[in-house]
Amino acid sequence: MSTARIGRYGSMTAVPTVSRWWVSRTAPQRIDLYTRWSFYGWIGAGLPLFTFAVLGSVAEVVSRAAVVAFLVGTAVTTVLAVVLAARGLEAHRVGRAVSPVLVVAAFGAALATGAAGLWACAGDGEYTEGAPWSLALSLGMVLTACSTVWATRWLAAPAAVIGALGGVAALVEGAPLGPSAALAAVLGLTVYAVALAFRFSVWVLDVVLEMERTRGVQLQLAVAEERLRFSRDLHDVMGRNLSAIAVKSQLAGELVRRSRPEAADEVADISRIAEESLREVREVVRGYRSTDLTGELAGARSVLRAAGATVTVRGEDGAGALPEPVQAALGWVVREAVTNVLRHSEAGECTIALDETDGEVRLTVGNDGVTGEPGTGNGLTGLRERLSAAGGTLEAGRDGDRFTLTATLPTGVPA
Image (tube, rainbow, N blue to C red):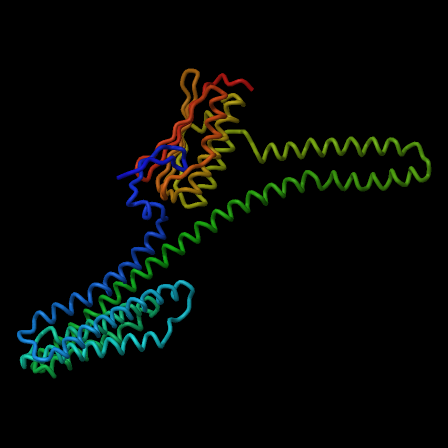
């Protein structure tokens, strides 16, 4: 079942209701969910399933108490290991250690579960290969949960200890020394490999989150740089004029106190400088909110590259030759399109194409990396109204994770 919703880009897109909770998340959030549920799924399902497999390999159950203890221990160890993984992921995110009490309790429960497994498997008086594995796996699950906060170098020693305990368990169960030593090595390497794989997942999550933070910082720096440019231009324009107004105001006041006729000239000069300042401020603002399409395309390229996207602009050479009203309208389209790319996507590639045919100009902006569930926005609605008033059209469409915005405008747009 699916529902059609108006996207942030203004397009109608069919989004499956069942997957709404997934597509509404960003890529880092999805990787975070994947990492979490990898831990929860492996620990929560792996240990109970292996417990039943071990019990199924026993030819005859002599002690029901041992089986009950094994099952109860498995349940307790599973719960503690899942809680330890969840607490570990949260602690790792904020850079603190997980509770030592929880770690000790989880390893203690795992050791007791392994002992109960040995007891249950020894009930038929014969060596059962699953018995050492039941001890190693219960302890290995807890070690996997600890890999959320423990460094890689800290995982080798516990894995070796767990493998040694498995080898000792095999000896106790009646296995020869050689096979027991080989089994200890296999158990240790297996536990270490699993813990290392999950530790690698945590590292990947760290890298993704750091890249996301870096991308946000790049966008903030781009905005800060533009604000700095505007403030610098405003200071250069107004600094001299305001200083002149201050000096001439003091001079005019002094002349008025002395009843000198030159005061009127100074006041008139102050008025002239103020008018010039107002005109220059308007020019600065007009430059900041430039309707020059070439400048808009250059600014779009700069901002998108700062956000980490590869930008390709085609037809830029002909932008300056377009009539000023056309440049003004298409400049708004470029601004809105770039804003949507930055806010509503994780674009790695963006293409801007400007094509002019007989009496018509077409601007196409396409990008990949569209994420999130489509919502309702006003930006494209305003653009449609602007272009419609000038006889133009605006089309927006999404295909998978790619979004395309196309604006068409006649070249004979009135001012």
